Length: 607
Image (cartoon, rainbow, N blue to C red; front, top):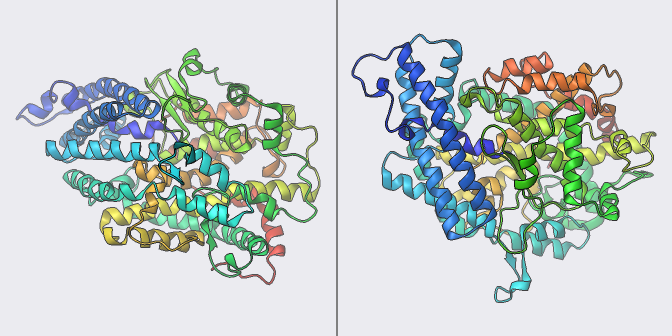
Protein backbone atom coordinates (compact mmCIF):
# COMPACT_ATOMS: atom_id res chain seq x y z
CA UNK A 1 0.00 0.00 0.00
CA UNK A 2 1.05 3.63 -0.27
CA UNK A 3 1.07 6.18 2.48
CA UNK A 4 0.39 8.76 -0.24
CA UNK A 5 -3.30 7.90 -0.06
CA UNK A 6 -3.38 8.52 3.67
CA UNK A 7 -1.76 11.88 3.07
CA UNK A 8 -4.26 12.93 0.43
CA UNK A 9 -6.24 14.81 3.06
CA UNK A 10 -3.30 17.18 3.32
CA UNK A 11 -4.01 18.28 -0.23
CA UNK A 12 -7.01 20.11 1.12
CA UNK A 13 -5.27 21.89 3.94
CA UNK A 14 -4.28 25.25 2.53
CA UNK A 15 -6.94 27.52 3.96
CA UNK A 16 -5.94 27.29 7.62
CA UNK A 17 -2.23 26.85 7.07
CA UNK A 18 -2.00 30.02 5.02
CA UNK A 19 -3.01 32.21 7.98
CA UNK A 20 -6.61 32.25 6.93
CA UNK A 21 -8.39 31.94 3.64
CA UNK A 22 -7.70 33.66 0.34
CA UNK A 23 -9.16 37.03 -0.65
CA UNK A 24 -11.92 35.20 -2.46
CA UNK A 25 -12.94 33.46 0.73
CA UNK A 26 -13.03 36.63 2.83
CA UNK A 27 -14.29 39.16 0.33
CA UNK A 28 -17.95 39.96 -0.06
CA UNK A 29 -17.50 40.49 -3.78
CA UNK A 30 -18.23 37.65 -6.24
CA UNK A 31 -15.38 35.23 -6.78
CA UNK A 32 -13.58 35.49 -10.11
CA UNK A 33 -10.96 33.62 -12.13
CA UNK A 34 -8.08 35.55 -10.54
CA UNK A 35 -9.36 34.68 -7.08
CA UNK A 36 -9.55 31.01 -8.05
CA UNK A 37 -5.98 31.10 -9.29
CA UNK A 38 -4.78 32.70 -6.05
CA UNK A 39 -6.76 30.13 -4.08
CA UNK A 40 -5.15 27.21 -5.96
CA UNK A 41 -1.66 28.69 -5.77
CA UNK A 42 -2.05 28.87 -2.03
CA UNK A 43 -3.38 25.30 -1.98
CA UNK A 44 -0.41 23.91 -3.89
CA UNK A 45 2.14 25.80 -1.79
CA UNK A 46 0.74 24.95 1.62
CA UNK A 47 -0.27 21.39 0.72
CA UNK A 48 3.41 20.61 0.37
CA UNK A 49 4.18 22.05 3.81
CA UNK A 50 1.33 20.28 5.60
CA UNK A 51 1.90 17.06 3.68
CA UNK A 52 5.52 16.90 4.78
CA UNK A 53 4.59 17.60 8.39
CA UNK A 54 1.95 14.89 8.38
CA UNK A 55 4.22 12.37 6.67
CA UNK A 56 7.07 13.00 9.08
CA UNK A 57 4.81 12.67 12.12
CA UNK A 58 3.20 9.54 10.69
CA UNK A 59 6.58 7.97 9.94
CA UNK A 60 7.81 8.57 13.47
CA UNK A 61 4.57 7.31 15.00
CA UNK A 62 4.65 4.05 13.04
CA UNK A 63 8.36 3.49 13.63
CA UNK A 64 8.45 4.51 17.31
CA UNK A 65 5.07 3.65 18.82
CA UNK A 66 4.63 5.56 22.08
CA UNK A 67 1.91 7.70 23.62
CA UNK A 68 3.92 10.79 22.64
CA UNK A 69 4.39 9.86 18.98
CA UNK A 70 0.75 8.87 18.81
CA UNK A 71 -0.20 12.34 20.05
CA UNK A 72 2.17 13.99 17.56
CA UNK A 73 0.68 12.08 14.66
CA UNK A 74 -2.83 12.87 15.83
CA UNK A 75 -2.06 16.61 15.94
CA UNK A 76 -0.53 16.58 12.45
CA UNK A 77 -3.47 14.66 11.05
CA UNK A 78 -5.96 16.91 12.81
CA UNK A 79 -4.34 20.04 11.40
CA UNK A 80 -4.51 18.69 7.87
CA UNK A 81 -7.98 17.19 8.23
CA UNK A 82 -9.56 20.25 9.83
CA UNK A 83 -8.11 22.58 7.23
CA UNK A 84 -8.95 20.15 4.47
CA UNK A 85 -12.61 20.14 5.39
CA UNK A 86 -12.75 23.93 5.37
CA UNK A 87 -10.82 24.05 2.13
CA UNK A 88 -13.18 21.64 0.41
CA UNK A 89 -16.03 24.00 1.33
CA UNK A 90 -14.08 27.00 -0.01
CA UNK A 91 -13.60 25.25 -3.36
CA UNK A 92 -17.36 25.26 -3.94
CA UNK A 93 -17.27 29.07 -4.18
CA UNK A 94 -15.69 28.70 -7.61
CA UNK A 95 -18.19 26.21 -9.04
CA UNK A 96 -19.60 28.78 -11.48
CA UNK A 97 -16.37 30.62 -12.22
CA UNK A 98 -14.89 30.17 -15.70
CA UNK A 99 -11.39 28.77 -15.11
CA UNK A 100 -8.94 26.72 -17.23
CA UNK A 101 -9.49 22.97 -17.36
CA UNK A 102 -6.54 22.11 -15.12
CA UNK A 103 -7.73 24.55 -12.44
CA UNK A 104 -11.25 23.16 -12.65
CA UNK A 105 -9.87 19.68 -12.08
CA UNK A 106 -7.91 20.87 -9.04
CA UNK A 107 -11.02 22.46 -7.56
CA UNK A 108 -13.04 19.30 -8.13
CA UNK A 109 -10.32 17.11 -6.62
CA UNK A 110 -10.24 19.27 -3.52
CA UNK A 111 -13.96 18.72 -3.02
CA UNK A 112 -13.78 14.92 -3.27
CA UNK A 113 -10.23 14.13 -2.16
CA UNK A 114 -10.74 13.63 1.57
CA UNK A 115 -10.38 10.20 3.16
CA UNK A 116 -11.54 11.63 6.47
CA UNK A 117 -13.54 14.81 7.02
CA UNK A 118 -13.53 15.92 10.66
CA UNK A 119 -16.54 17.80 12.01
CA UNK A 120 -16.29 21.56 12.26
CA UNK A 121 -16.72 21.44 16.03
CA UNK A 122 -13.14 21.69 17.43
CA UNK A 123 -13.80 19.28 20.30
CA UNK A 124 -15.23 16.65 17.98
CA UNK A 125 -12.41 17.14 15.50
CA UNK A 126 -9.85 16.65 18.28
CA UNK A 127 -11.71 13.55 19.49
CA UNK A 128 -11.72 12.07 15.99
CA UNK A 129 -7.99 12.63 15.51
CA UNK A 130 -7.22 10.94 18.81
CA UNK A 131 -9.49 8.01 17.99
CA UNK A 132 -7.75 7.45 14.67
CA UNK A 133 -4.28 7.51 16.21
CA UNK A 134 -5.47 5.18 18.97
CA UNK A 135 -7.00 2.68 16.53
CA UNK A 136 -3.84 2.53 14.44
CA UNK A 137 -1.59 2.16 17.47
CA UNK A 138 -3.84 -0.52 18.97
CA UNK A 139 -3.34 -2.51 15.82
CA UNK A 140 0.40 -1.85 15.75
CA UNK A 141 0.79 -3.01 19.36
CA UNK A 142 -1.47 -6.00 18.83
CA UNK A 143 -0.17 -9.33 20.13
CA UNK A 144 -1.63 -12.73 20.87
CA UNK A 145 -0.41 -13.79 24.31
CA UNK A 146 -1.14 -17.35 25.43
CA UNK A 147 -0.12 -16.22 28.92
CA UNK A 148 -0.36 -12.41 29.26
CA UNK A 149 1.82 -12.51 32.36
CA UNK A 150 4.73 -13.89 30.35
CA UNK A 151 6.12 -11.72 27.56
CA UNK A 152 7.76 -14.67 25.84
CA UNK A 153 4.34 -16.18 25.12
CA UNK A 154 3.23 -13.12 23.11
CA UNK A 155 3.18 -13.32 19.33
CA UNK A 156 3.23 -10.42 16.87
CA UNK A 157 1.35 -10.26 13.59
CA UNK A 158 4.46 -11.65 11.86
CA UNK A 159 4.56 -14.59 14.28
CA UNK A 160 0.90 -15.40 13.72
CA UNK A 161 1.35 -14.98 9.98
CA UNK A 162 4.12 -17.59 10.00
CA UNK A 163 1.99 -20.04 11.98
CA UNK A 164 -0.99 -19.73 9.66
CA UNK A 165 1.27 -20.00 6.61
CA UNK A 166 2.24 -23.57 7.53
CA UNK A 167 -0.73 -25.85 6.69
CA UNK A 168 -1.37 -29.16 8.38
CA UNK A 169 -1.96 -28.83 12.13
CA UNK A 170 -5.62 -27.77 12.26
CA UNK A 171 -5.90 -27.17 16.04
CA UNK A 172 -2.69 -25.10 16.00
CA UNK A 173 -4.00 -23.05 13.07
CA UNK A 174 -7.35 -22.50 14.75
CA UNK A 175 -5.70 -21.36 17.99
CA UNK A 176 -3.51 -18.87 16.12
CA UNK A 177 -6.48 -17.51 14.16
CA UNK A 178 -8.49 -17.04 17.34
CA UNK A 179 -5.48 -15.54 19.09
CA UNK A 180 -4.90 -12.82 16.51
CA UNK A 181 -8.57 -11.86 16.53
CA UNK A 182 -8.35 -11.03 20.24
CA UNK A 183 -6.53 -7.79 19.39
CA UNK A 184 -9.57 -6.09 17.88
CA UNK A 185 -12.52 -6.17 20.34
CA UNK A 186 -11.02 -3.18 22.25
CA UNK A 187 -11.35 -1.17 19.00
CA UNK A 188 -15.09 -1.67 18.68
CA UNK A 189 -16.27 1.26 20.81
CA UNK A 190 -13.74 3.61 19.21
CA UNK A 191 -14.74 2.44 15.75
CA UNK A 192 -18.42 3.12 16.36
CA UNK A 193 -17.61 6.64 17.51
CA UNK A 194 -15.26 7.11 14.55
CA UNK A 195 -18.13 6.29 12.19
CA UNK A 196 -20.38 8.85 13.88
CA UNK A 197 -17.81 11.63 13.79
CA UNK A 198 -16.48 10.95 10.29
CA UNK A 199 -20.02 10.85 8.90
CA UNK A 200 -20.79 14.16 10.54
CA UNK A 201 -17.78 15.72 8.82
CA UNK A 202 -18.68 14.19 5.47
CA UNK A 203 -22.23 15.53 5.68
CA UNK A 204 -20.89 19.01 6.36
CA UNK A 205 -19.25 18.67 2.93
CA UNK A 206 -22.63 17.73 1.39
CA UNK A 207 -21.91 14.00 1.08
CA UNK A 208 -24.46 11.49 2.30
CA UNK A 209 -21.80 9.78 4.45
CA UNK A 210 -18.11 8.92 4.48
CA UNK A 211 -18.58 5.99 2.08
CA UNK A 212 -20.28 8.23 -0.48
CA UNK A 213 -17.39 10.67 -0.09
CA UNK A 214 -14.90 7.89 -0.86
CA UNK A 215 -16.82 6.78 -3.96
CA UNK A 216 -17.10 10.33 -5.31
CA UNK A 217 -13.42 10.57 -6.23
CA UNK A 218 -13.53 8.15 -9.19
CA UNK A 219 -14.51 10.63 -11.91
CA UNK A 220 -18.08 9.28 -11.95
CA UNK A 221 -21.15 9.44 -9.67
CA UNK A 222 -20.93 7.19 -6.58
CA UNK A 223 -23.78 4.92 -7.71
CA UNK A 224 -22.21 4.52 -11.15
CA UNK A 225 -18.94 3.50 -9.53
CA UNK A 226 -20.71 0.85 -7.46
CA UNK A 227 -22.26 -0.59 -10.64
CA UNK A 228 -18.85 -0.56 -12.31
CA UNK A 229 -17.45 -2.67 -9.48
CA UNK A 230 -20.29 -5.16 -9.79
CA UNK A 231 -19.66 -5.41 -13.54
CA UNK A 232 -15.98 -6.14 -13.03
CA UNK A 233 -16.72 -8.75 -10.34
CA UNK A 234 -19.19 -10.48 -12.65
CA UNK A 235 -16.45 -10.70 -15.28
CA UNK A 236 -13.95 -12.48 -13.06
CA UNK A 237 -16.19 -14.33 -10.60
CA UNK A 238 -16.45 -17.55 -12.68
CA UNK A 239 -12.67 -18.03 -12.46
CA UNK A 240 -12.76 -17.46 -8.69
CA UNK A 241 -15.54 -20.02 -8.25
CA UNK A 242 -13.50 -22.64 -10.11
CA UNK A 243 -10.44 -21.95 -7.96
CA UNK A 244 -12.52 -22.03 -4.76
CA UNK A 245 -14.11 -25.36 -5.67
CA UNK A 246 -10.74 -26.94 -6.42
CA UNK A 247 -9.13 -25.61 -3.22
CA UNK A 248 -12.10 -26.78 -1.15
CA UNK A 249 -11.88 -30.28 -2.65
CA UNK A 250 -8.20 -30.59 -1.75
CA UNK A 251 -8.66 -29.12 1.73
CA UNK A 252 -11.55 -31.51 2.39
CA UNK A 253 -9.27 -34.37 1.45
CA UNK A 254 -6.70 -33.09 3.93
CA UNK A 255 -8.86 -32.02 6.87
CA UNK A 256 -11.97 -34.12 6.43
CA UNK A 257 -15.32 -32.71 7.49
CA UNK A 258 -13.69 -29.65 9.05
CA UNK A 259 -13.96 -28.43 5.46
CA UNK A 260 -17.49 -29.08 4.18
CA UNK A 261 -17.45 -30.54 0.65
CA UNK A 262 -20.07 -28.07 -0.63
CA UNK A 263 -19.89 -25.16 1.79
CA UNK A 264 -17.64 -22.23 2.67
CA UNK A 265 -14.02 -22.88 3.62
CA UNK A 266 -12.96 -22.18 7.25
CA UNK A 267 -10.81 -19.05 7.26
CA UNK A 268 -7.91 -20.51 9.29
CA UNK A 269 -7.10 -23.17 6.68
CA UNK A 270 -6.27 -20.91 3.72
CA UNK A 271 -2.70 -20.08 4.70
CA UNK A 272 -3.17 -16.40 5.47
CA UNK A 273 -3.99 -14.49 8.63
CA UNK A 274 -7.02 -12.90 6.91
CA UNK A 275 -7.65 -15.67 4.33
CA UNK A 276 -7.19 -12.99 1.69
CA UNK A 277 -4.54 -14.81 -0.36
CA UNK A 278 -4.07 -18.56 -0.45
CA UNK A 279 -0.57 -19.09 -1.80
CA UNK A 280 0.63 -20.86 1.33
CA UNK A 281 -1.77 -23.79 0.89
CA UNK A 282 -0.07 -24.71 -2.37
CA UNK A 283 1.53 -27.89 -0.92
CA UNK A 284 -1.98 -29.20 -0.18
CA UNK A 285 -3.48 -28.35 -3.57
CA UNK A 286 -0.53 -28.95 -5.89
CA UNK A 287 -1.59 -30.58 -9.14
CA UNK A 288 -0.77 -34.26 -9.71
CA UNK A 289 2.62 -34.84 -11.35
CA UNK A 290 3.49 -31.18 -10.86
CA UNK A 291 7.17 -30.44 -10.94
CA UNK A 292 7.67 -26.82 -9.93
CA UNK A 293 11.41 -27.24 -10.19
CA UNK A 294 12.02 -24.68 -7.48
CA UNK A 295 10.74 -22.96 -4.37
CA UNK A 296 11.66 -19.30 -4.37
CA UNK A 297 11.25 -19.15 -0.59
CA UNK A 298 13.66 -22.04 -0.10
CA UNK A 299 16.14 -20.50 -2.54
CA UNK A 300 16.10 -17.18 -0.69
CA UNK A 301 16.49 -18.89 2.66
CA UNK A 302 19.27 -21.16 1.43
CA UNK A 303 21.17 -18.22 0.02
CA UNK A 304 20.48 -16.23 3.18
CA UNK A 305 19.66 -13.31 0.94
CA UNK A 306 19.81 -10.14 3.08
CA UNK A 307 16.78 -7.81 3.04
CA UNK A 308 18.87 -5.05 1.47
CA UNK A 309 19.85 -7.32 -1.43
CA UNK A 310 16.19 -8.23 -1.96
CA UNK A 311 15.32 -4.54 -2.21
CA UNK A 312 18.20 -3.80 -4.59
CA UNK A 313 17.00 -6.62 -6.83
CA UNK A 314 13.59 -4.97 -6.98
CA UNK A 315 15.15 -1.63 -7.80
CA UNK A 316 17.08 -3.18 -10.70
CA UNK A 317 13.82 -4.23 -12.37
CA UNK A 318 12.67 -0.62 -12.55
CA UNK A 319 16.04 0.74 -13.65
CA UNK A 320 16.08 -1.92 -16.40
CA UNK A 321 12.98 -0.19 -17.80
CA UNK A 322 14.77 3.16 -17.90
CA UNK A 323 13.80 4.62 -14.52
CA UNK A 324 16.43 6.52 -12.54
CA UNK A 325 17.86 4.73 -9.48
CA UNK A 326 16.37 5.46 -6.08
CA UNK A 327 17.98 8.35 -4.18
CA UNK A 328 20.57 7.82 -1.48
CA UNK A 329 18.07 8.91 1.16
CA UNK A 330 15.84 5.94 0.31
CA UNK A 331 18.52 3.56 1.54
CA UNK A 332 19.32 5.68 4.58
CA UNK A 333 15.77 6.28 5.82
CA UNK A 334 13.69 3.21 4.90
CA UNK A 335 12.88 0.47 7.41
CA UNK A 336 13.73 -3.04 6.12
CA UNK A 337 13.76 -5.22 9.27
CA UNK A 338 11.81 -5.26 12.53
CA UNK A 339 13.81 -3.43 15.21
CA UNK A 340 14.52 -5.31 18.41
CA UNK A 341 14.32 -2.28 20.67
CA UNK A 342 10.88 -0.82 19.95
CA UNK A 343 7.36 -1.35 18.67
CA UNK A 344 6.70 -0.56 15.00
CA UNK A 345 3.84 -0.98 12.54
CA UNK A 346 5.37 -3.62 10.29
CA UNK A 347 2.60 -3.60 7.69
CA UNK A 348 4.40 -3.00 4.38
CA UNK A 349 3.94 0.51 3.02
CA UNK A 350 5.57 3.02 0.66
CA UNK A 351 6.07 6.64 1.69
CA UNK A 352 6.47 9.91 -0.23
CA UNK A 353 7.60 12.11 2.62
CA UNK A 354 8.47 15.33 0.79
CA UNK A 355 6.34 14.85 -2.36
CA UNK A 356 9.55 15.09 -4.41
CA UNK A 357 12.54 12.82 -3.69
CA UNK A 358 12.26 11.54 -0.11
CA UNK A 359 10.62 8.21 -0.95
CA UNK A 360 10.86 5.23 1.41
CA UNK A 361 9.45 1.82 2.16
CA UNK A 362 8.65 0.43 5.58
CA UNK A 363 8.38 -3.32 6.05
CA UNK A 364 9.85 -6.10 8.18
CA UNK A 365 11.37 -8.21 5.41
CA UNK A 366 11.62 -11.98 5.68
CA UNK A 367 13.55 -14.12 3.14
CA UNK A 368 10.51 -15.57 1.39
CA UNK A 369 8.73 -15.33 -1.95
CA UNK A 370 5.87 -13.25 -0.55
CA UNK A 371 8.13 -10.50 0.73
CA UNK A 372 10.25 -10.64 -2.44
CA UNK A 373 7.18 -9.84 -4.53
CA UNK A 374 5.93 -7.30 -1.96
CA UNK A 375 9.19 -5.39 -2.38
CA UNK A 376 8.61 -5.14 -6.13
CA UNK A 377 5.05 -3.97 -5.39
CA UNK A 378 6.01 -1.30 -2.84
CA UNK A 379 8.77 0.05 -5.06
CA UNK A 380 6.11 0.58 -7.73
CA UNK A 381 4.58 3.22 -5.46
CA UNK A 382 7.91 4.98 -5.01
CA UNK A 383 8.73 5.05 -8.72
CA UNK A 384 5.20 6.30 -9.47
CA UNK A 385 5.67 9.07 -6.91
CA UNK A 386 8.94 10.17 -8.47
CA UNK A 387 7.42 10.08 -11.98
CA UNK A 388 4.77 12.71 -11.17
CA UNK A 389 6.91 14.88 -8.89
CA UNK A 390 6.99 17.72 -11.47
CA UNK A 391 3.19 18.05 -11.53
CA UNK A 392 1.50 20.73 -9.39
CA UNK A 393 1.24 19.37 -5.86
CA UNK A 394 -2.50 18.78 -6.11
CA UNK A 395 -1.84 16.44 -9.07
CA UNK A 396 0.90 14.43 -7.34
CA UNK A 397 -1.08 11.25 -6.96
CA UNK A 398 -2.30 8.39 -9.14
CA UNK A 399 -5.07 8.66 -11.72
CA UNK A 400 -7.19 6.75 -9.26
CA UNK A 401 -6.00 4.88 -6.19
CA UNK A 402 -6.28 1.54 -7.97
CA UNK A 403 -3.59 2.74 -10.37
CA UNK A 404 -1.14 3.27 -7.53
CA UNK A 405 -1.59 -0.28 -6.29
CA UNK A 406 -1.56 -1.79 -9.79
CA UNK A 407 1.81 -0.46 -10.93
CA UNK A 408 3.99 -2.63 -8.72
CA UNK A 409 1.69 -5.60 -9.23
CA UNK A 410 1.99 -5.28 -13.00
CA UNK A 411 5.77 -5.48 -12.54
CA UNK A 412 5.33 -8.59 -10.41
CA UNK A 413 3.51 -10.22 -13.34
CA UNK A 414 6.80 -9.97 -15.21
CA UNK A 415 8.55 -11.92 -12.44
CA UNK A 416 8.21 -15.06 -14.54
CA UNK A 417 10.42 -18.14 -14.18
CA UNK A 418 12.36 -16.68 -17.09
CA UNK A 419 12.99 -13.53 -15.06
CA UNK A 420 14.13 -15.57 -12.06
CA UNK A 421 16.51 -17.44 -14.33
CA UNK A 422 17.93 -14.14 -15.59
CA UNK A 423 18.60 -13.21 -11.96
CA UNK A 424 20.37 -16.51 -11.42
CA UNK A 425 17.87 -17.61 -8.78
CA UNK A 426 16.78 -20.70 -10.71
CA UNK A 427 18.58 -22.81 -13.29
CA UNK A 428 15.72 -24.19 -15.39
CA UNK A 429 12.39 -22.80 -16.57
CA UNK A 430 9.42 -25.22 -16.39
CA UNK A 431 8.39 -25.69 -20.00
CA UNK A 432 5.84 -28.51 -20.03
CA UNK A 433 2.10 -28.38 -19.36
CA UNK A 434 2.49 -29.65 -15.81
CA UNK A 435 5.01 -26.93 -15.04
CA UNK A 436 2.77 -24.25 -16.57
CA UNK A 437 -0.28 -25.29 -14.56
CA UNK A 438 1.85 -25.43 -11.45
CA UNK A 439 3.07 -21.86 -11.94
CA UNK A 440 -0.40 -20.55 -12.83
CA UNK A 441 -2.03 -22.26 -9.88
CA UNK A 442 0.49 -20.70 -7.52
CA UNK A 443 -0.16 -17.32 -9.08
CA UNK A 444 -3.95 -17.66 -8.93
CA UNK A 445 -3.79 -18.69 -5.28
CA UNK A 446 -2.43 -15.22 -4.65
CA UNK A 447 -4.06 -12.97 -7.24
CA UNK A 448 -7.42 -14.55 -8.04
CA UNK A 449 -8.16 -15.65 -4.48
CA UNK A 450 -7.83 -12.03 -3.36
CA UNK A 451 -10.52 -10.60 -5.64
CA UNK A 452 -13.62 -10.99 -3.45
CA UNK A 453 -11.75 -9.98 -0.30
CA UNK A 454 -10.60 -6.82 -2.05
CA UNK A 455 -14.23 -6.08 -2.88
CA UNK A 456 -15.97 -6.87 0.41
CA UNK A 457 -13.88 -4.79 2.83
CA UNK A 458 -15.34 -1.53 1.54
CA UNK A 459 -18.71 -3.09 0.78
CA UNK A 460 -18.92 -3.66 4.53
CA UNK A 461 -17.62 -0.20 5.45
CA UNK A 462 -19.86 1.61 2.98
CA UNK A 463 -22.86 -0.11 4.55
CA UNK A 464 -21.59 0.78 8.03
CA UNK A 465 -21.15 4.42 7.04
CA UNK A 466 -24.57 4.58 5.40
CA UNK A 467 -26.30 3.04 8.42
CA UNK A 468 -27.42 -0.05 6.51
CA UNK A 469 -25.27 -2.00 8.98
CA UNK A 470 -25.94 -1.04 12.58
CA UNK A 471 -23.29 -1.20 15.33
CA UNK A 472 -25.12 -4.12 16.92
CA UNK A 473 -24.57 -6.10 13.72
CA UNK A 474 -20.95 -5.23 12.89
CA UNK A 475 -19.56 -8.74 13.26
CA UNK A 476 -22.53 -10.70 11.98
CA UNK A 477 -22.68 -8.75 8.72
CA UNK A 478 -18.90 -8.94 8.34
CA UNK A 479 -19.11 -12.71 8.17
CA UNK A 480 -22.21 -12.65 6.01
CA UNK A 481 -20.29 -10.66 3.39
CA UNK A 482 -17.24 -12.85 3.69
CA UNK A 483 -19.40 -15.88 3.01
CA UNK A 484 -21.32 -14.19 0.19
CA UNK A 485 -18.29 -13.01 -1.75
CA UNK A 486 -15.43 -15.27 -0.62
CA UNK A 487 -17.14 -18.48 0.37
CA UNK A 488 -15.15 -18.28 3.62
CA UNK A 489 -16.47 -18.81 7.15
CA UNK A 490 -15.15 -18.23 10.67
CA UNK A 491 -13.57 -21.38 12.12
CA UNK A 492 -15.25 -20.88 15.50
CA UNK A 493 -18.43 -19.26 16.69
CA UNK A 494 -18.33 -15.45 16.60
CA UNK A 495 -20.53 -12.91 18.34
CA UNK A 496 -20.95 -9.17 18.70
CA UNK A 497 -18.45 -9.30 21.55
CA UNK A 498 -15.91 -9.70 18.75
CA UNK A 499 -14.85 -7.08 16.23
CA UNK A 500 -13.16 -9.14 13.54
CA UNK A 501 -12.94 -6.34 10.91
CA UNK A 502 -10.50 -4.53 13.21
CA UNK A 503 -8.02 -7.40 12.93
CA UNK A 504 -7.32 -6.08 9.44
CA UNK A 505 -4.90 -3.14 9.35
CA UNK A 506 -6.79 -1.14 6.71
CA UNK A 507 -9.95 -1.08 8.83
CA UNK A 508 -8.13 0.01 11.97
CA UNK A 509 -6.18 2.66 10.03
CA UNK A 510 -9.16 3.86 7.92
CA UNK A 511 -7.46 3.11 4.62
CA UNK A 512 -9.94 2.69 1.75
CA UNK A 513 -9.57 -0.79 0.30
CA UNK A 514 -11.36 -0.85 -3.05
CA UNK A 515 -8.10 0.24 -4.70
CA UNK A 516 -6.76 -3.28 -4.17
CA UNK A 517 -9.66 -4.87 -6.04
CA UNK A 518 -9.24 -2.35 -8.85
CA UNK A 519 -5.51 -3.02 -8.88
CA UNK A 520 -6.11 -6.74 -9.42
CA UNK A 521 -8.01 -5.82 -12.59
CA UNK A 522 -5.79 -2.99 -13.78
CA UNK A 523 -2.48 -4.76 -13.31
CA UNK A 524 -3.34 -7.27 -16.03
CA UNK A 525 -4.43 -4.50 -18.37
CA UNK A 526 -1.16 -2.68 -17.71
CA UNK A 527 0.84 -5.87 -18.15
CA UNK A 528 -0.82 -6.61 -21.48
CA UNK A 529 -0.19 -3.04 -22.67
CA UNK A 530 3.49 -3.16 -21.72
CA UNK A 531 3.90 -6.53 -23.41
CA UNK A 532 2.34 -5.09 -26.56
CA UNK A 533 4.71 -2.11 -26.39
CA UNK A 534 7.61 -4.55 -26.01
CA UNK A 535 6.52 -6.36 -29.18
CA UNK A 536 5.71 -9.60 -27.36
CA UNK A 537 3.35 -11.91 -29.29
CA UNK A 538 3.19 -15.11 -27.20
CA UNK A 539 0.81 -16.16 -24.41
CA UNK A 540 0.37 -13.31 -21.95
CA UNK A 541 1.53 -15.37 -18.97
CA UNK A 542 4.94 -15.92 -20.60
CA UNK A 543 5.74 -12.23 -21.05
CA UNK A 544 8.33 -10.41 -18.95
CA UNK A 545 9.23 -6.84 -19.80
CA UNK A 546 12.39 -6.89 -17.68
CA UNK A 547 15.03 -4.86 -19.49
CA UNK A 548 12.66 -3.51 -22.15
CA UNK A 549 12.93 0.27 -22.53
CA UNK A 550 9.91 0.54 -24.88
CA UNK A 551 7.67 -0.97 -22.21
CA UNK A 552 9.24 1.39 -19.68
CA UNK A 553 8.54 4.39 -21.91
CA UNK A 554 4.85 3.40 -22.16
CA UNK A 555 4.61 3.02 -18.40
CA UNK A 556 6.53 6.18 -17.55
CA UNK A 557 4.37 8.33 -19.85
CA UNK A 558 1.26 7.34 -17.92
CA UNK A 559 2.88 7.67 -14.50
CA UNK A 560 4.07 11.20 -15.26
CA UNK A 561 0.43 12.33 -15.66
CA UNK A 562 -0.24 11.80 -11.97
CA UNK A 563 -3.89 12.63 -11.49
CA UNK A 564 -3.85 15.63 -13.80
CA UNK A 565 -6.32 13.81 -16.09
CA UNK A 566 -9.44 11.74 -15.35
CA UNK A 567 -8.44 8.10 -14.94
CA UNK A 568 -10.11 6.92 -18.20
CA UNK A 569 -7.72 9.23 -20.10
CA UNK A 570 -4.70 7.91 -18.22
CA UNK A 571 -5.88 4.34 -18.82
CA UNK A 572 -6.32 5.05 -22.52
CA UNK A 573 -2.81 6.52 -22.75
CA UNK A 574 -1.43 3.29 -21.32
CA UNK A 575 -3.71 0.62 -22.78
CA UNK A 576 -5.82 2.17 -25.54
CA UNK A 577 -8.95 1.39 -23.45
CA UNK A 578 -11.07 3.83 -21.45
CA UNK A 579 -12.81 1.16 -19.35
CA UNK A 580 -11.37 -1.14 -16.72
CA UNK A 581 -11.60 -4.64 -18.09
CA UNK A 582 -11.16 -8.10 -16.57
CA UNK A 583 -10.49 -9.77 -19.91
CA UNK A 584 -6.71 -9.42 -19.59
CA UNK A 585 -6.83 -11.33 -16.30
CA UNK A 586 -8.89 -14.08 -17.91
CA UNK A 587 -6.51 -14.19 -20.89
CA UNK A 588 -3.53 -14.53 -18.57
CA UNK A 589 -5.09 -17.47 -16.70
CA UNK A 590 -6.66 -19.19 -19.73
CA UNK A 591 -4.59 -22.41 -19.34
CA UNK A 592 -5.51 -22.66 -15.65
CA UNK A 593 -9.20 -22.06 -16.32
CA UNK A 594 -9.29 -25.01 -18.69
CA UNK A 595 -7.44 -27.23 -16.23
CA UNK A 596 -9.64 -26.25 -13.26
CA UNK A 597 -12.77 -27.06 -15.24
CA UNK A 598 -11.41 -30.55 -15.82
CA UNK A 599 -10.42 -31.03 -12.18
CA UNK A 600 -13.81 -29.88 -10.89
CA UNK A 601 -15.91 -32.32 -12.88
CA UNK A 602 -18.62 -33.63 -10.56
CA UNK A 603 -17.89 -30.92 -7.98
CA UNK A 604 -20.17 -28.05 -7.02
CA UNK A 605 -18.87 -24.56 -7.77
CA UNK A 606 -20.22 -22.22 -5.10
CA UNK A 607 -21.51 -22.78 -1.61
